Length: 357
Image 1 (cartoon, one colour):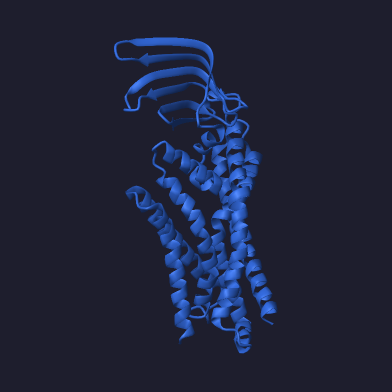
Image 2 (spheres, one colour; image 1 turned 120 degrees about the horizontal axis):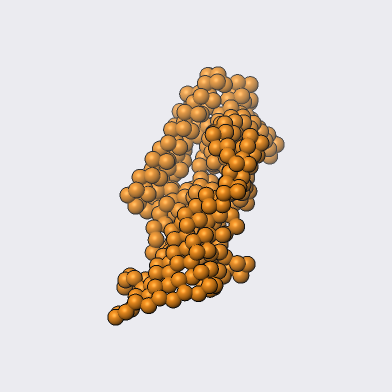
């Protein structure tokens, strides 16, 4: 009977969560579409704005999963309470602890779905959507297409005037440093790019070297340079941390640490991805604690409102902790794990209060 009941509970939770997710995504996509109407330019019209919003849905789904789980769980458990099904479940000898385990299993399945979205679907489609929008907006005006970037590779600081999706960088400035951080040389190339072999191709290259007692200059029409910074890492520098997969975050954090650059922002994002799995597992248990206490006799609308309030308060506090951690340089692991661990302890304490009443 426990197997049949577990399947029933898990299926009910999953159906409710994805129904809630569908409603939230519909609203979010509409908002995203309307916000893009203010960016219409070049070949980026209404149709392209709609496609852009559609392509961002997997990433938005990944970001909204925790609050969708909370609201969906509250809705599902509330319906079971209203239909007296939870009373029957308890009459069959199922304890709150056993019920919490069933809910945690449903959270586990959603966590697997979250990993799939966050690693293989959401980031790549989000990156593609942003590139598609920029290419459509700046078609015919390549000078405006792309982003200026400062990067560091060992003892070389590089400034790229324009980085676009084809890795055509435009002008590039390179500042080579000695081991004592003094300036060794300055180089500039009018055009630059990365070929299929990850070699940097520099056109109209000019370099000024600073030596102990003289300054020398050289120039060449075409030269190849080799840097540890490849096209994948360079692409990561153009993407917001939230739109990166865990693999990309790990690679970029490693690059930043090797070059003695601050990686706290990306480390917090990396560990928050891992700790978000605990949040996903906790949300159904938290919903159970509320359904058995203060929300036992209220209506569906009130439960959903309470779910929204709890979710918003939690995520506001989480963002506050993350921002303070980055500003003041707190340990990234502690910063990322503190909110979900506190949420988990809060849910467990509420369940214990119910169990021992």
